[in-house]
Image (tube, rainbow, N blue to C red; front, side, top):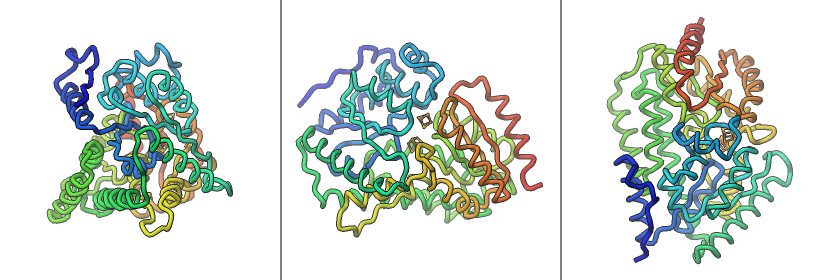
Length: 383
Ligand code: SF4
Ligand code: SF4
């Protein structure tokens, strides 16, 4: 059995973090290879079919940002700095033990960060087209995924067959459907779960690497909540749709502020919410790689120009979840989302739904100010 070394600073880590390291170490000792990824555009089915355990490496904590700032510019988004800081400090078990880090050509900051990561870790960067509407985007992305398949087969001495891909597609679709079923419970007037509880569950289940178990637990919670049929959260609270950047690192500041102001977040449009969960892959397609490429290319993200999918989806989601207001959260220095905010504001205006833009980072210094601003926004809803 192969032996894997723990980081030099292991003994200084908290018990929870130590447990994380030991869990991944045990998986590696059993022969499991680990892939780390950062983005909803990562084709999980291909990694599943290659037999890799895939985990998100997106940094959501401010604790590693000072370390990252020794190498990266300070005026970079906190997600990139936090993620890179976890690599520099060996504080994330998944980054530490990753056999491959899968990056993508999304925003400039991430692209260049992957180059630095590649100096110390085995890193593979997927070249994503910059828009889905150009005629060759679909062909280019499909070819890019075929290149990825060849890379994984050669690097890990595995065979990625159509049969394995089809199995992975079915399983990932089932997980997406389960997540959607849970999130769609918040379409109701009587909310059986708060936005905070929902987000916390969805985030946590993403780290359950037994996908069938994750599906079962998600469906069990959805069944349970449907059966209760009891309103647990603020009666009559204003309904807010959250869009924009990934919010894992600012979630308590932002979603908590909505709830403290008596409202409810009823829809998370962004990554780790409904957006990637509705990216269903065609299970009947003759060519599974083509089907995976088609589904992933249809993810709305501000790195695309134009971001036609997000522009089409948002009005429909506002109606589906009967949003009283839209909160567009951009992480500091995320140019793509900050600039796109202008278009999102116009879309909300056309829909007659109040819009608020919020730029923040992982520090707590602006928490009080965010509470005040969101409370003022909530008071304007439904006037
Ligand atoms: S917001 Fe865009 S770039 Fe960021 S994780 Fe989501 S899909 Fe990827
Ligand atoms: S939040 Fe924006 S700047 Fe940060 S990684 Fe995502 S797309 Fe890039």
